[in-house]
Length: 403
Image (cartoon, rainbow, N blue to C red; front, side, top):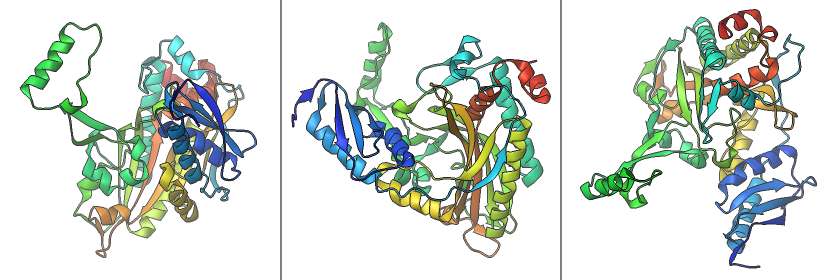
């Protein structure tokens, strides 16, 4: 096999075993993190082989070897667990799902896509985003007596390490860098950009990474603030979190963003309290979906872990049924219905209680759980299911967003 740089090419690789659609989807999504010389890996219809799309200049032998290692660890995943559905709502709107929502919002001037996983929005989109956040917060306060909170978008690496994020999702982390405190390096950077037509970035050795990251999960900054506390009774906290997850080439409009908003709820207490909160959260999600008149389902699920730990961690999550996912139907680019993961309801056991020294009334590590609602995905799903014509929207929502 040629070890030298090659032109763009396609290669067919045999999978170690036949896979199902769930594993195939994980392979295709996570393949963007295998090598910068791989455009993507697509599982073939026979489910026994995968097509590798190489970029021009790829050192073929090395990249193929890396792709094969990736495929070997990904096919170890055990899938086919029974999917349990806990909530299912049906919309009253009888109109068809709207195709091309992202482009439609841009054309109407309601959204601007920067092209790197960031969006700006205004008008009805902004009003809907605010309404989703406010309505969820209102329901959280009513159901859980949740206390309002606020946390920064930056989180230090030590906190992410304690939360286990580097072990589970290292590919999604964004480290924050700043110019080194060096007069000559800073002046060199300034001069380079003083008359250039485009931005000139400093060399890597002039960037200092001091251990700060952009927060990749809304709940994480809460736990350090509870460190050393004891909870005789259960308590709940809620806030709007700014979240950042590096998605590489998977970025696509409101479907998958680098930067997005999450209406978060964290509950802290003993096992009985936390499990009761999870059950109660199902009713809250149902009420929220009914308010916006959308098709919605809450069901058992697993997280998309990094390839080398995916099999073990997914198996544990599925076996313990600790994650319930909020699935709201949307459309892909071809008009096919897809189930968009718009949030989740999670049990953590005493993991965060142990890691952050948070105790319950008996002096044991406290139990925690959380609910996260991805605001932009709720936006996308709601516009998909009601379209752009105000008369299709439920009256109360219509009056608030199309004012």
